Image 1 (cartoon, rainbow, N blue to C red):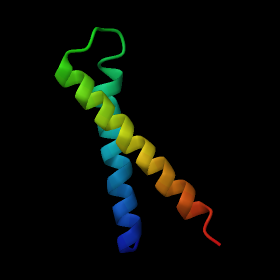
Image 2 (image 1 turned 120 degrees about the horizontal axis):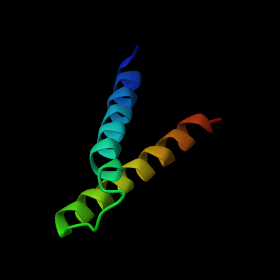
Image 3 (image 1 turned 90 degrees about the vertical axis):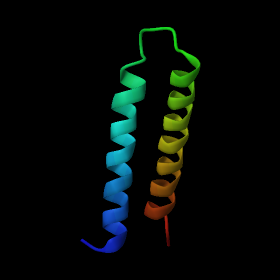
Image 4 (image 1 turned 60 degrees about the vertical axis):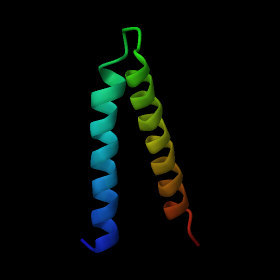
Amino acid sequence: MNNQDDKISVKLYMADLCYNQCVKSYMEKILTPFEKECMMKCLENIQGLRIEFYNAFNKK
């Protein structure tokens, strides 16, 4: 693996960790302000990661 692969692996791990800690644990409850902030940050990170992957796979 090269340095770029390592960075992608870390980003995937962090996105998965964030999803499991924030999104899954908050699915069926009313959110506190802290939990809402955590959820929004997690979703922003996942969206950013999706865009990065899209751009990486569509390079010419």
